[in-house]
Length: 342
Image 1 (cartoon, rainbow, N blue to C red):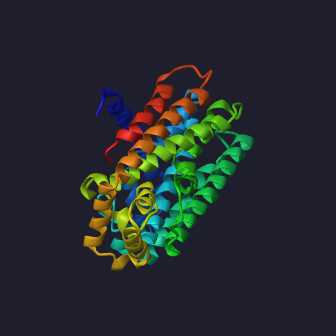
Image 2: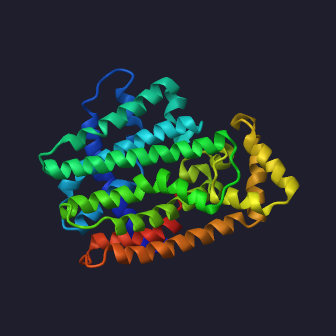
Image 3: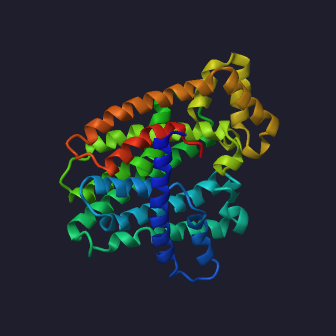
């Protein structure tokens, strides 16, 4: 990994520590049996800190102090962990951040309840108007609520495609999905929230959203590739989990259009089976077919084009913003999205 990407990871680790301490402080007040230890489980496992880090860095880039962005950053991190708990159950995932998922450890009812609690706790920092003032705090709350709606709509779209075995999909459909499910809360909302807070709601947000879309889409394509390229020990999730779950990744959509009619019929049948009926051998075969038919290379090239678009959108989004370590960090996230290994 290059020196620049190493610096990105070090910066993200710093943000992750800062947010982790604040999250721990807020969750320490929860002492209910069957809940307290569960809501702390995923946050204590750590993470990349990308979402709160991007929010704080954007706030700093637009002239605001870290302390003003902290509440929104904590809210985003708590929501992220709530989404993970629910996603893991919906996907029947067995591992998260290298350890068993919450529903594997405690059962689905308690895990879902913990996810509900974290989502509720996430709104608490947004109620505090003492730092941002009433008007700006309301703007921040409105952004977060809109983000939640978009994210859950994206999750519903993905789950619906899998339930109904929808296969008549193109890359444009994939981008529509990730714009809601991933980009909205992973990159677009952190950028918009950081700029809102840092500039005291004085800068336009449309160009930041455009940059965030391309950045987030590149992040998701890389995440999809890591699921089929890396080992579970490296990325902390189930090996080949996306294939087993039938997720409509770019690689899968490309493969559906690249194989012959008989193989496509088999693949559609495979996707229509219940997840537990998909054998390890069939999952491995789908992975092999992706390699053989150039589906992995197609996704890599697509991610490269998204990064080029993100680079152009970055220049527009941060035009006129004084160059600083915070701006440079945000810019360096573009190559990081393509080269990260976890």
